[in-house]
Every structure is written in C-alpha cells, then in structure tokens.
Length: 377
Image 1: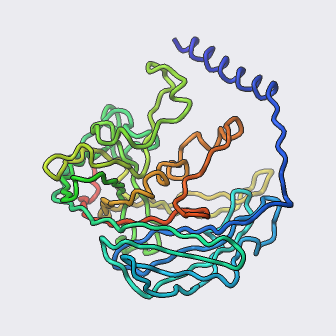
Image 2: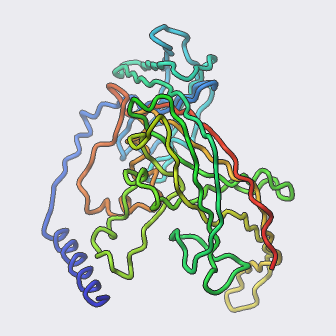
Image 3: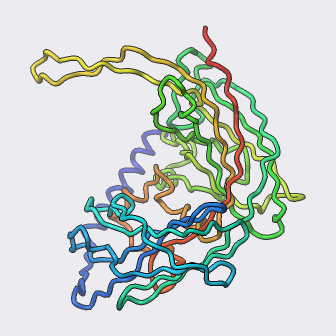
C-alpha cells in the first residue's frame, strides 16, 4: 500500500512540474495606468474605541517606505445612520503594513472617541485627495452566552492533535494527556444565520514566577462534533492521498469556525478536546562551544511545569469576517501559501466598497477552565 502511495505522489508531483514547463503565460504590467485605491481594515468590538487602519494600494515594484501612507485623509464614523464624528489619526503603524515581500509599509491608525454598543450598525467612510472615496458597513453582533463548561481528562497512546507532545510524566500506552470539553452555549438570535469562532488561551500572565512569558493558544481537536465540519479544510496533500495512507494526519488549528445551523432551542453543546494544556517553561544557559565551529550552545538547566487557567473565547463574528477568517492567513498550516506557485490568481475578499480591505465586528463571551497542579509521579 505504501509503495502505491509513493508511486501516486510521484506521478502527481511529476505531472505538476511538467505542467509548469509546458504552460507559459505572459503578463503585461501596466504601470503607467495604475490607480491606487484606499485600503481600510479593522475589527470593531462593543464598549471599545474603534481603530481603523487606512493606507493605499501600491505596485510591488515600489519599495519606498512611505508608498502606502495616505496624507490628508479624512475618516467619518456613522452609528445607526447618524453621523457621529470625524475620526483622528492616532499613530502610524509599521507592523500591520508589512507586505509579503518583507518591505516595510506604513499605515495610519484612526481612532474614535465613541465606544459603540452591541447591535449598533457601524458605517465608516474615508476619502483622501483624488482617490475614490470608500465606505464599509458592519453590525456589531449580540454576544452569545456560555452556560457551562464540563471537562474530563483522558490518556491516549498516540497524539490526537498532530503537533502535541507526550506528557513528561507519562510513558507507554498512555503517554499523551488530553482534555475533553463539553461546553453548553446559548444564543437568543439562533433564528438568523450567525457565525462563531472558538479559541482557548493559556493565561501565561497568571504565572507569577515569570510575568513576561508569551501567551499560547491551544490547538483544538474537533472530530467529535459535526458542527465543526464547515471549518478549516484539510491540507491539499491530504486530499491527494487515500484514507488508509500512513501519511494521513489530519490537521487541527488554534481556532475553530462554525455557524449556528445545528443549534436547537436557541442552544448547543460543543464537544471538542485539547492537549498540551500545562505550560512547560525551560530555562537555558548559554555555554561556549569548544568544537571546530566555536558557536555557543544553549543547555537546558531547569524545566518547570505550570497550570495557568485557560481562557475560553466563544466569539460571535459578523458576516464580513467569516470568509476573511476562512482564508489562508487564519490557517497557519495551510498548503495554500506553498502551492501559490502553481495556483491561478484569486480575488481577496473585501467589504470595502470602491477600495480594498475588511471592516468587521465581534462580540466575545468568555469562560475559564481551572487546571489542577501538574501531577507528580
């Protein structure tokens, strides 16, 4: 069976390479008639100030740092059809504007003084000189509720999530420690199509011994619940390989997208599992290396295992964000990026009229799972 799989993959890859040799497409870049467009992005939350990034599109041949920065731009905020204020630029951001070629781009961050509420309809209008004015609308969703969170620990002989690690205190048949979570949720707006995002975060800030540890989002095993079937697709290579293949290893991600289509009586009980929910922190000591290369090496000198609480985020997302989150950037292990060389161009989702970008909104409900201290054997 394995031999036939190797043969099949070889044929697929060889066919792909031959197609690249056989197919040529000439592309003519019309630099002279390029017209920049306004780029507007932002995710709005209730009871928070609104932050919108504003910039302009540019040709990839333009490498000047300020090529994307808009000057003399104006942004107006409307709530429920009523003009509220002119938003002011608070700062210039050089991180969110970093492009795929590694060049630094600049984008202005515009802020409101008003904090909108859940259910408000938000409209943002922007203009800048001779560029075509743009606008985007979103309605801040009403948050759903988390009614209860029940957990149960179970051990497995192999990992249930492709990148989880064996428990340091376990060996043999039950070397992997996992937690099954059943979370009952309620949504009074289940009569309309709604979209949600599930995330679980280890609250590293609760570890008093090391206040600056990075936060960590947990990967979610979703095979036990049909509500997650509409979420992230498996990798492209998985679709090419038969189900019995030794290479088949379904991937899971640190967020899950789903809708309320399976909700009944305004509620549902989510069924999922997690792993690696203890925070393992190792301290390394740098030592000089006396080998021929002379590079220093880092030797582990102390490993500690912490049990910070887990923050569960059950977030209602606006309709504009659902296709945006489903794209490759929200899927860190997607083969989409690696196979762009053999892919046709595709249109990026945008709800910014006359421009580029996504302006959406979210409302989060939160719960907390308290983890017992790591068991000593």
